[in-house]
Length: 334
Image 1 (cartoon, rainbow, N blue to C red):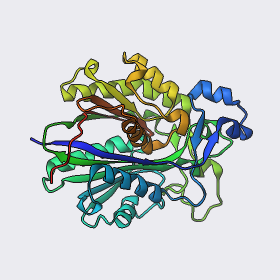
Image 2 (image 1 turned 90 degrees about the vertical axis):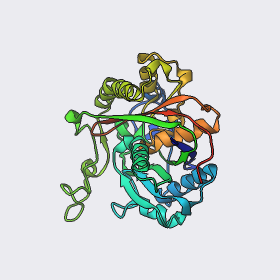
Image 3 (image 1 turned 135 degrees about the vertical axis):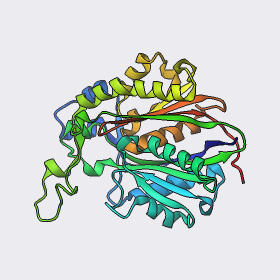
Image 4 (image 1 turned 90 degrees about the horizontal axis):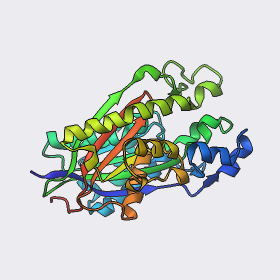
């Protein structure tokens, strides 16, 4: 049997760097306080003329080039975002057009920061179900800074912008994705939200309202959810894969908070050398964070053929996702 493996990755980040010192000109906390609580020193911020679809296209082009796959060979495009160019049509349609991927099925996934791990699993399941689907592009992209109040420390200290992409292809040898697991705890549904623009709070017919129209986040609730459920969903994915947690070589988390990642790695018995982090330099980029981190980890040679890795994320709602992979570096089937 062939495997379904990640054959190419890419990412795109804004040039603009926002430091803690700059951010704190609008906040009632110090740069040192932000660093202590989150581990974040700076974040990337999209320029006014930047578009999420352009960043997604650039990340996708790099992933396709690494995989050696022309866009016209793509059978599926999944865009994972909650901050695309428009409410509709889907961002995946813009990628279909801009890349020239004329034969690809498209759809968007809105699972918040779990989007990319969810999208990878959906693509792999689609490939397993339909032998005609040989190559899939999965993109995570967010322009979160467009939706925050710069004076709200709960959101402003964390979020950044960017895009990351991966190409999934069939491989001639077993490897790649083993299994995924998901969990939802909706008891804190209202803890991370943006209500404005939804059908319950439409823009039409009302004055702008900062409380409704910008991102709201309860940081403590997010922390508690993550430390409670992420280890469990990772263990479930390992069990479904027939792998003991101690056999995992490398873990890559949604980059929500450096202190959170440090806590989770210690709680699960891993050393920080078994993960990669970039949240300290680019902030929390939502569903783009896992693919950006994956692309940077690959570029730095942190993943080797045969490594057993876990991708894991937590998103608003709250939802949790984890997948186990045998990392392979081999050419796709023709």
